[in-house]
Figure (cartoon, rainbow, N blue to C red):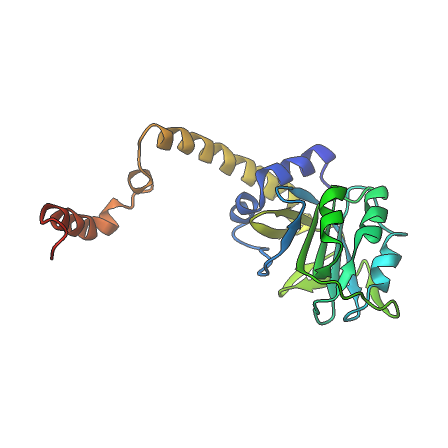
Length: 223
């Protein structure tokens, strides 16, 4: 289990760096809206399997959620029905949730943005959910084919969502830190005018096209 400082580091490193550091594994292949804009989050998952169009699981989760966890609401078959609105998000914030990830819709979009609790959702819709069936609390769920288990770590930001298996969390964090350090050194060199084409050893692969572009430039752009 990661320390709070390590979880914060995961969030700051971001989904792209963590994804690369994990061996390009765990990327949730879905597009999400983010409330409020610009937020980042990370934390261990508390997954909930909801019946389609039903948010009884979201209500039940408020009694089981632990501080620092990311509430993950999945549906047996995702529908654009609002599983979370301002009132549920307010409860989650009071329980200390790090974020909410909804494989479905949310509503009260303006209020969610103002609340400050990071929320990711696939859709926004005023259509409310039923409260009739709960399929599972803390059980494994799948988001776009990617498994999320209780305690797996999620990294969420503007680039997307990445799942890190709990067994690999510290290993991936270390690799992500090393990658970020390398990128920092590269950033300085790029700012100084060097090119990725040379530093990555790519120039030879495009030498013919570069030569052609140079000839076209000399000819005034005419073939």
